[in-house]
Image (cartoon, rainbow, N blue to C red; front, side, top):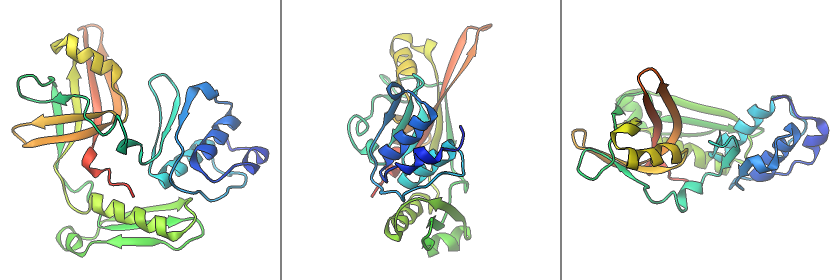
Length: 249
């Protein structure tokens, strides 16, 4: 992806769906191969870009706190930050767990460490003062752990401060998290294969693990498949994020 031309950038508007679509238009990306939401953040106007188009698209994603990815059909997808607060994302599509009647999984990767502890959050939009949110109790317990994001495109400090507060609520304390779930379709072909082939990013599922006392909803954030033709196995791995953390403003 290359830098955008002056002509293409001169007519960009300040809302996410227009910005994303104009970038994709300039790249020659087919309109039928994209699904772009309108967003909640008014963006700063942009002149000709000195960075790559992909870098700019990800800056828009970070400013909106949305999700930008390539869908299973090859389409570019941009989800605004409140997408997961509306149907069908408000309801779990299936439960994966240990008990009778629940969907089988082959492995559940749990995480409870300091990797995602941040108690000093610093957010800066271009041309505006850095906004900071911190938690004294978390700093006293775990030391100061800084999360910094610069170069964002919101048009003022209030939304940057909101974003700092959101990140602080999400990361100031350690949480036992299900990081990934692995599925083997052959364990229950009639029930599992439709899910393996049909579930994608932002699909909401429930994960239950009796030993770890986990019974929570998660969003799928990444999908990978490991196919072994020699042994005729197909293992699917879903990267997860806790649905309860989706506390968008």
